[in-house]
Amino acid sequence: EVPGYELGDLIGMGGCGAVYLARCKKDQRAVAVKVMLAKVEVSEKDRINFLREIEVTRALKGHPNIVSLLDFGAAGTGFYFVMEYYPEGSVSNLMSQKGGRLPVSEAGLIMLQATEGLIHMHKEGFVHRDLKPDNILIERTKGNIVAKISDLGLSKNFDKAGFSGCTVTGQYAGTYQFMPREQLLNFKYVRPVSDIWSMGATFYYMLTGNLPHDFPRGKDPAGVILHDDIVPIRKRDRSVPKGLAAAIDRAILKDVKARFQTAQDMKRALEAAL
Image (spheres, rainbow, N blue to C red):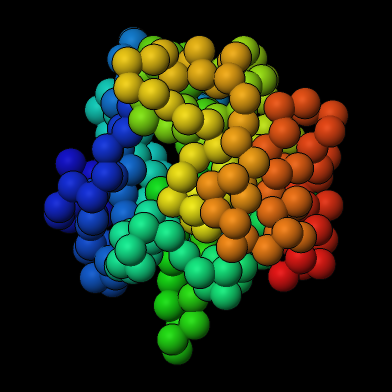
């Protein structure tokens, strides 16, 4: 039970928690509630410190391309986070509706908006660490699409506090595809440049329906990330415009220093290509 909210259907599940569609009892507003259960004993001091750290996440509230954290707290051995709910779902849902990929005209708008959200997140000192199509949500306002980055590092903070017992495998099962090499090697201390790789991989997938790496059945995905080459995007789809392909290929280079170093640099390149 989450105080003040009536939980409904399960709408998402991850390595560290579950997300439910819920209704705020006070105003009947539909919201998304993420529930994360601690796998270790949590002292009152640790609980207070963790919730204080989450309070900082509210610094991101109000940006048009970031999902707002509305409320949070502790209930028993678990923690809950209340976020805006968008019935349109995620970029993954939109891709499914469009046959598995998005046209440049539609994808370009999402790219620029999501990168704008990332610029703000990094400016405020946050690294997301799990950017992927499922974590970019879609709002429709008067028929126009607005992209919003979701899951604002809550899992990272939960893991950092030592409550979850999450491992790289446990937390990222199914999302290795959007993880840069250095994040696998240095999971807890990734920098903004790693988010740039994940965002680039997300854009690559939006346009092609394919991933930057080939993940053969039976092969360890961690080994693929560490040792295998990245496939240039125009080898997946020759119809991707050359300028846009160059920007995305640079974002997903294995060499950290050769990538865009800031989300602002990445956005400038995307704007020039689009």
